Length: 137
Image (spheres, rainbow, N blue to C red):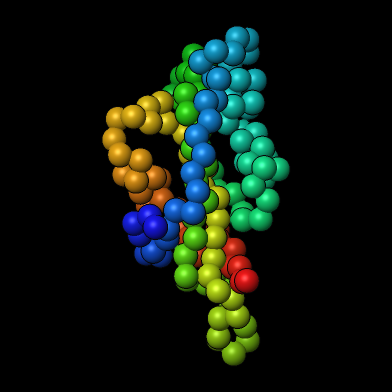
């Protein structure tokens, strides 16, 4: 079991699965806007096709020079779960088992620190209760 990772709004989450993918942003030639759209902007739709179920939250990488900046080399998809539910029924009780979401973020280097630390930095930027979806067995 993965260590507990804390979100921006204080929810403890755990990693269910992780997937790394090269964006190919450094290999594609042509219009830089097209490259960003292909490698970054369309990532959530690609993830939703492959990992159906949880909502997708993407942390968009910064783009400093609109004419030259290439997308980061790595796209990291992380399926996260928590025993905290985000929706309540009319009585104020939780009707589900927990909540989950898929986090997508980008990095140029995935070997510069331990994987749990890389993911913890990204998880700390999301508001779980705003994006996660409840689930039950």
